[in-house]
Amino acid sequence: MSILVFDGDCAFCTRSAGFITRHIKPTTEVHARQALDLETLGLNPEQCSTAVQWVSDSSETRSGAAAITAMLREAGSGWSMLGSVGELPGVRSLAAHTYRVIASNRHRLPGGTTACEMPD
Image (tube, rainbow, N blue to C red; front, side, top):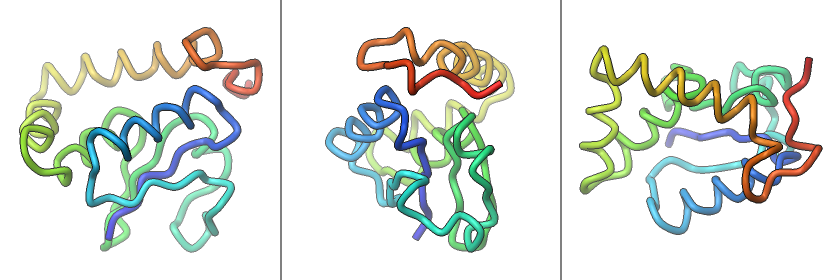
């Protein structure tokens, strides 16, 4: 089973992960980086503190918007269609840009705290 890894120190990320598990209900497992052995997943703490990570059964990894798209593709129903649309060239670029803007400002978003600020 694939895993979506988020920064559990970030309140905004934790709330977003809760939304994913409650409303999208993916087949992907959703875990805070702090609760995992990142090395066994081929990840490091820096990667996981700057962007959400997705790791497949075959150890393929995706980061940021691509991680969200991969999780959506596995979610079923309309979510997988949304994930497929997210991989279209123009949409993929827009999603990546939007993800970077949100990630850079996550401490300013609802539920965000100073702990959500991106590391320098």
